[in-house]
Image 1 (cartoon, rainbow, N blue to C red):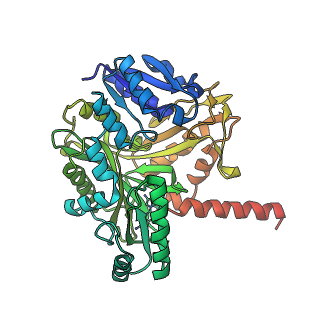
Image 2 (spheres, rainbow, N blue to C red):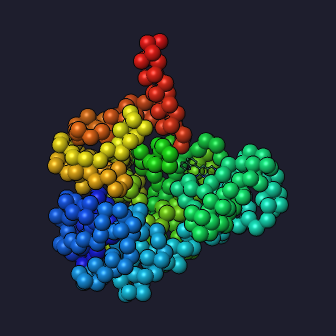
Length: 459
Ligand code: MV4
């Protein structure tokens, strides 16, 4: 096992990785930017090293400086966390060239699953359900028109190198399809340096269902069941839960097993998430694969008892997974609320500045993954997520009750956070009955805004 690892990240995930490493007797080195010099997580690392100025392009994205920091501090491996360099195959390759272990997949496996055309081909072979659509990349417009006629409109044009909603076009007729392919190609070429696009059937309303998987370097892969991440706004998730409410366990198991088979066939070592859309009939269609540990991994940890970051470190060191599929079952229900320093009443405007009050919730079944505390100054340079509140209960109703209580206890000020919005959500009929889809939060916010405007008008 490694003696010492470097963490190429910041905030709550840096702290999460420090905790996993410490539990394994592994020392940690954190790199940080000048904007993070007083980052509370740095106090828990064995060593910290400044790699540049606040903008991430001068620090957390600087491959040369991160590798140098790892060499200087005698780290044997680098954990990239999520975001920044986590899904950068070039970084994984540079690590390998420098004989530094990248705690994540090989650049080849990352490429096979990160490229969506390639991923979809592998998925078809593995028996992972995918949307009907073009067999691979669209070469000629005529080809796309033909496929669209076959599968029927609406269709969606997607960039093979895209992800998280970038480079997509919905087409409801032939003319929109022709225009969509052209503009998606151009956008993808300039944004990702790869103009490859493909098309598939567009599903209007659906739930976002994702399967947590982990593979090792011995050909083993397991799934840790699924999460429902339908509660999102502009591709930013707000709430995630596990398991997905109301899904038939036999169908769930079949999809989850197909996701494990996909990463087995990709010879994938590390943690990954296979994303799906689920329609009203509980039919599943794969969207993409995320080749990193995700923000919402704790809900899967709470229902399975597996420490996902620990498994990531184990498999990167060449050890086999510590669990087999038959060891795993779903225990209870977990919900996570992302606590963002944003003002939900002002279009989610990011809130930088001093936290004067920080009073954390607690009690049975309550977990808080946060780097924030009283006296912490939120820098303006990075993501606004300052923590994740995760609860576990025997049933979904128990988990919701625990989340309500924890949100009531949680006090952060004077900066605005998403806590009050989460508290209202926990009382919404649609959330409580799991009667939602990926557009639910946006519909609710619009409804709330309209109600506020009519109040002011005195109507
Ligand atoms: C889709 C889709 C409907 N049909 N693909 C958005 C992000 C990227 N992961 C894929 N996305 C979508 N792909 C087909 N064939 C709808 C979306 C989508 C979405 C998916 C998951 C979570 C939120 C979403 C919000 C808008 C659109």
